[in-house]
Amino acid sequence: MLKEIGENFRFGYYMDSFGFPSYVSELKAIAALDHGHRWEYAVMGGEIRAEGNTNLSAATLINDIRYGHVNHQGWDMPATPQGFFEMDALRAAFGYHFVITDYHQPLRVEPGQPLVLSFKVKNIGSSPFYYRWPVGVYLVDETTREKVFSLQLDQVDIRTWLPGDEWNVKKQAYDKTPKEYPVLASLSLPKTLKPGTYVVTLAVLDPEGGNLPSVRFEIENYWRGGWHPMGRVGVGVNNAHPALDPATFYLDSVDPSVHYILPKSN
Image (cartoon, rainbow, N blue to C red; front, side, top):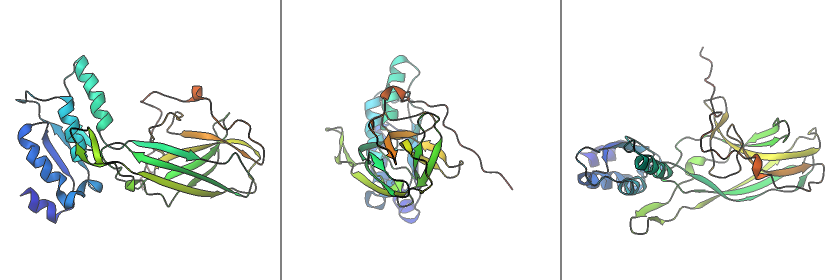
């Protein structure tokens, strides 16, 4: 039945018995949909079946998450100190985890000239991000945090930043390791841009939530509100100090200032 439904409809799957030994064959059938590619465009998730399962452990669930490219689960673990520790391990395996592995930008650029920057992204999580949300590049006044210039990278489709595949339980790694996805951008700066030193800042924006930052890269360069400051650039001036002070970064994994704005209803 699962095979027949999966071949005729291109939807994801919600399995209600993750971690239960008798459902391993069903998980394998799900992972095999579309020749093993269904997870690349359809959300895979579910919940943990704890009752009657004496072998339930975070390690078992993480293998299920990685193998099935699971985006989310309910019923994480028991509310005990050990359970909370294991929930952190589970959350580290769920969904997407975008790491910027390489980044380059110039020290100086002139007003009216292109600002060329490049970076590489690796998804070390278990699933893609399933919406085409844009990546924005900003020039930010470091003192006031005012955005003096911005541009969206329309050519970048973050849905294609896929994780690895073919989870190997013994190695605790994907046999097909995650790729690095290169991004090259040339931003035409306005001639009227005031000379000065600015911070090049990246953000992934929610187009349905007011174009505000809503997806974080898994890097230390982070300011509250969803912004990723990457380095200083001099516009029409020399830039003697391109590196940012790590003490200005917000390192808490939870940022309550991230929000969205609902569109006005007609």
